[in-house]
Image (cartoon, rainbow, N blue to C red; front, side):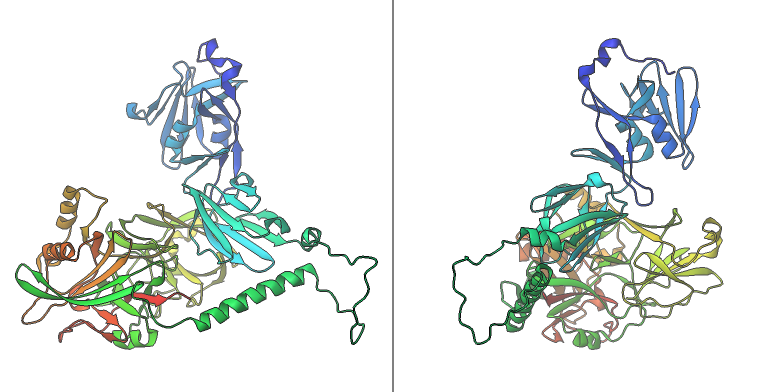
Length: 599
């Protein structure tokens, strides 16, 4: 039995209470840990915790050591002093962190979270996890709604209200159907308002929250209209009763009617673009006595759709030909790319799906699923789990070498890797549908794992589940993202940090006068696409400092960053390029930022 470590007064029953603590994970089933609230601090049963995570225990007379075999971290529990310490580090020490109750040893949740690199969230209960659960898919039909999460669901994460369901801890990363109203209640708490929620039955299955329309509930909730006994029957040509539609059929007909009205409304919508939604200017700007041609588009991202578009990744065609076929309202070139391979360099997310990854820590232009623009530095870790074994994806949609790679259907080039070097897994809806080299289509993914890792996943078969886990340092439901740089203007950093940003790029990017492509956000959250002409006898272009001066001249801008420039700079509007193109302009650009009317 462990020694008692606090004085008796500390254990007065009126300061003890019990509370639910739940661990939620991508691969492990949720579990409730035994816990106690003591003087507004939360403690967990360390025996149960250690057993669940297969931790090793080394008890002595007055001290217990908990070891994590994954990384050899040590949690030291002093039963006399009541302290917890991680890796014998005085800066990672917790007082009043250990006590015994009913022959069980409890440890402060803060110490456990620090030891095991957990995050925690408290609302009605407390949840601990490695990464925040995400809503990664929403399927909507007239009789069923399915919310798919990245983690296995604990029923305590869901709260049913009269008009909808609240999910926590969670963030939404999927476009929400028009028929569902979506709210961010607070950090990591989301609500989906659903019409006639009481007509649905809710079930939880692994990572899915499923709402099934119940015909009996519809029948019970419908108002019954009765004919008075003394009323006379109306005269009709034929006294034939029309079969009454079931409540389920009525619901379906109602939805079909609404969809038909929406489609008709879209057909009748004018094709004219309001200048409040998109304003394009071609200006001559005086920069220290030099007159610079500048093309500026001011876009309302809430009313128009700004998207990352790929010019046939791996098999690019002429940029003008590609854009004429795509027919955007407006487009500019996007991030940097490898000129020899014509493949992107930098992180890219398109329509909520990661299409390229990189180790750089450079600014990215971001749009969330609600049309809010940001410019932020993004750290992204992309992991998969097969048979609960984690693998880190090192490359996506590129011929660059990596021991774990991914191709999506956006990649149009030849996949040159050999089956002698890699295991090829074709994945659809998170399940392996084929072991072998085959190009992905639609939403399929082709995963490549170097054969030296196969010893960790023996006896792999088709039908095995593959779990994708994305960890991003920004709490944003990213829909579109492209990495570029350098940062030109921000309200997030001090000026000294901005100077350091400038110094982290090569002198050719900073000092050389060249055509430039810039994306900016103004104080009204409008997005600006800016392309500066160059390579002209009268005007070679601008450098970094002149780009900052240009933004001052334009005014009302809070954030801005460069995209790829030089011979890649393109400004396409109304079916043609507006900026000057010298004889050395690049006619093969892999990625663009395009502007489209919302569907």
